[in-house]
Image 1 (spheres, each protein chain N blue to C red):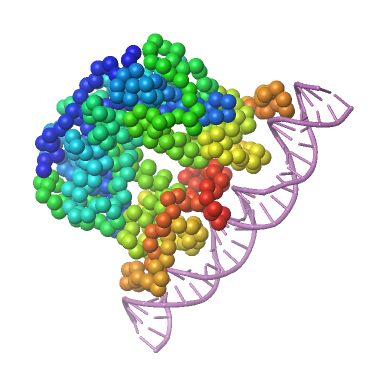
Image 2 (cartoon, chains in turn purple, cyan, orange, blue; image 1 turned 45 degrees about the vertical axis):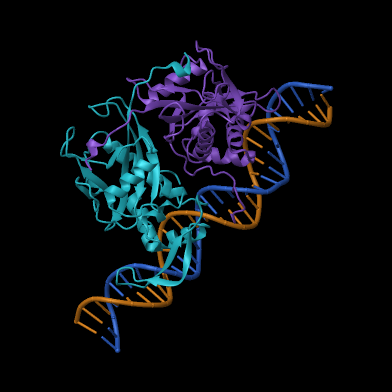
Length: 238
Length: 238
DNA sequence: CCCTTAATAGTCAGTACGACTATAAAGAGA
DNA sequence: TCTCTTTATAGTCGTACTGACTATTAAGGG
């Protein structure tokens, strides 16, 4: 068969977002309430159709700005997750969704923009069941982020520009759902070149109590060597 | 703006494949020669339009069977890579491509099917420049496979059902482009639970010469603990 | 002034890793 | 047949990394 002679059906293409942040030590996700059928009244991941003149990445960043109400989303971490293309995903028509994961440092109140749809931060554990196959997309996003924490400096995307090692550790603990030993975490982070760099002479009172913590900035390393592996998930003979 | 009132443009959706294998100790990729404009006469990754009743994954597996001529592709490793959606990717129309990576153990002669298009195994290093943005897709596939060798048992997808540790090591060396110490590689593979399991009493003459090697099968572990990290790429103080 | 809290420093044994050396089992060629 | 070459496999050794701890420092609260 000739490649170019295939009949092709028109598809609608959307860009949907799993926007994650940490509020009060818990992982939260940005959800919108659907105003129309199907799944009217259900919660769903924010997203929308890709326009004729934009890529899925551009559409995702536009949606991110609209839904969060942030004026500048250019510095935020946005990453393609995967594409969902099962024929019956949307009962109305054939929709192919390119899903993205976005990570926010400080949780803004959502929906500051002009959009009439409700948008809310929802704790990850209480999210769902969501509309369409968004439960699976959200779970995939969580898996991906958890895995990338091990071998990239992605955790700093959850933190403000200057952060303490305690805040960084809380990112790992929140996403992985496990407690980590503080001295050991500190040692490993500082031993990994390019992960964080110290802000000279700066310190911050973490919560009013306790010794002030030194501040760090995100480093330049794309990958962590050695990686920061999570504690043995199962009963492995480690 | 209301989510569901967005105007949407029809897109064509294709599933393209970066099919990788190892022939004669070199990484090869399956390419087809384009018979029509645009890029007529150029080499490209195999692929085709997603049909109305199938997902991108289904389309990719169908294309894989057509292009390789293999009757049973159900056991082969096929994995979604990412989606390419820039508006000007294809001069004819708006095409969104979901790219996949497939790994083949034993390299069959391509194009055993009825397709008239030429399909050939091309050494990875001499592939390109390819049609459209396929150079980038191929490079992304290579990056992804190289990274996944570190923390998954993916390398066994390049090997036949029963293989020697020398063959497994050659997969790593070929994809990473680096030489590995044989005793150390062996020790690490055998120390990683679930990576490989011994085939009792079986051995194979590797190339006619040398001591026969014991045979192993792919294990059941999804992720490798500890991971098999590649040698320090830069001058890191490891 | 203690007590609590949180950050940071340091210790110690077990494990993993890279660089080696040594041995075993096959075929090739003299 | 006897070596030489080739490949697989076994083992050694010093360093680095890891997890589980203990100890100290610096803040605020009663």
